[in-house]
Length: 114
Length: 111
Image (cartoon, rainbow over all chains, first blue to last red):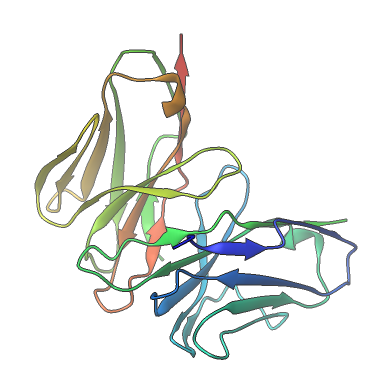
């Protein structure tokens, strides 16, 4: 068990470009979450999956954002036509829904849009 | 939306005790979590309270009062490595495990 891993850890892009982030959850975890965190703020919920089904999307997730979890294992988060306001840390978390149900977070993918 | 409030910053001396308060007003409640986040790193789970009272885990304790919408995280015998952001989070519903976070409290431990 290597924990939740995210790739890339850092991404610098120009405004208008598309970016994609990948998350590999802990292997037995069926629930996967994407959060966004900006400096000095707590994580904000974006979307979550149970197995391959995307069950909820935040209003923060504009049409430029799309997330998938095609086989119920890894997930991708794509941002199209990036804007400077998209600059943030994108965190992925997973859980298997134990009694406590704590989320296990990856170290995040930091996006800088120039 | 969910409203979760905690102080922005706290400073304390090595070896001392610090108490981080968190108040919440949410559409539902199914547990309160505390996470620690060092700069540039992932949040890591510290504690979970779903019933009123105190949960103790080594140097860290967490308290919950559901009637008051209030929790605190108590850090004892502070060490330099405890300098971090501490995030209060509420699970609003029982079926999706989604957490709503406060903005975090940055604790600085001074020698």
